[in-house]
Image 1 (cartoon, rainbow, N blue to C red):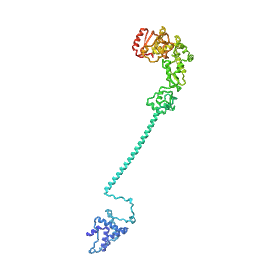
Image 2 (cartoon, rainbow, N blue to C red):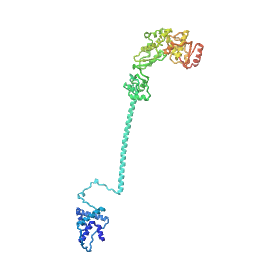
Image 3 (cartoon, helix red, strand yellow):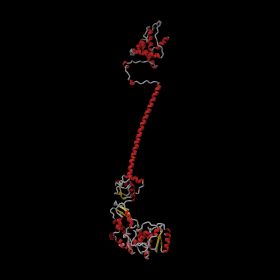
Image 4 (cartoon, helix red, strand yellow):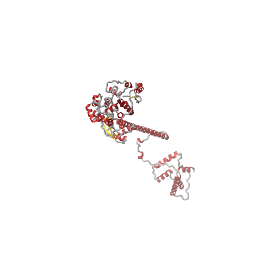
Length: 534
């Protein structure tokens, strides 16, 4: 039984059935191998595969240490055939197939399988470049090495990518900074250039009109259109940053040689209501200036060719004076004669004001403008003078002294009263102003000591210390205030006056003793101080 068990363990279920059936019939069946071969033939497997299957079974059996089932020869008599009827081969095979299918579905059986190999396939040679080199070591080490290589490659790739990206970023930044630097440089150059004159050598005047209510931006547009500035927007920013805001409307004569600052300051001064000659220049004659001082002011003109020499020559031209006397008869009818010893016949008749001087202005036209202004000023007094038995020449002569001796309207009225009182009493006027004019020093700065030490014995028709009455003519060109004070003085008994040079206050006296006291207190005690009679 042990042997049968061993044999059964070595045979498949179907082979065991076939063997038992053969034994039951009393005849020896083919060996399991042969049955197996028949089975393979029934299953459609060729003879060429049988040896391979057998070899694999033997190899599998050797590996599993399963002893080969060998058929032993025995001398035991074969069992007698069963009397009962036996199932047919077809029934047994069907039953075996059913049991085998059931067993297959319930148990996992490892069956070695061998496939036929085509000889042509065996002869195919693998190309050398596809042959992988042998890898030594365990599978775990191989996997670790492969993972390490991949990690290293990834790190190397990332480093290379980061390096390339860094170079790209650096290049972009350099180009960007370079672009910003170049743009900033040219922008700075452009702005700096826009602040400078459009044409520094072009002194030609351009007349522009600034409308009322114009904004800084609108003014810039007008200037840019006229070619006076390079950029209106920059002018607007410049005016804003420098707090130039109170620009005035009107007509302006500007030059392309002017920078933005000069133009902005000019626009703050205010324009004219009507267009003026572009070459026009302002000549301002201060109150109390002499003809010689006016000539010096003319010499300071920059735009025009009018000279001081031409002015002094024309002012002494008798033919010109006669021409003007005919033009302004009321003003010049009492004009002093040349034989009177007057220094300048028209001294005192040139009204101090501001005059426009252009390229077309001459000495003759300028003097005419001044005489016209004085005639207009005196026109309001012509009738009054006739009632007071005063001439224009008398009023202008006294007014020229009042202009220099007093500074306020009230003081001037009191000083004019003193001069009229002295004239009425046939007393000399005793004014240092006339002596200084005779010496050619009027208008110059003198100290109080120089004024106190003035030469009252000078031989001159203007020496009002020695001579009674008026000088031959005015010593300066008086203002409207001095003229008004002379025409309409206050009524006083004052015969003397002296001024405090520190405060400008004038001290009046009716007696000489009172006057000497004022002189000692307000003049002699301060002899080192500057004089007020300049």
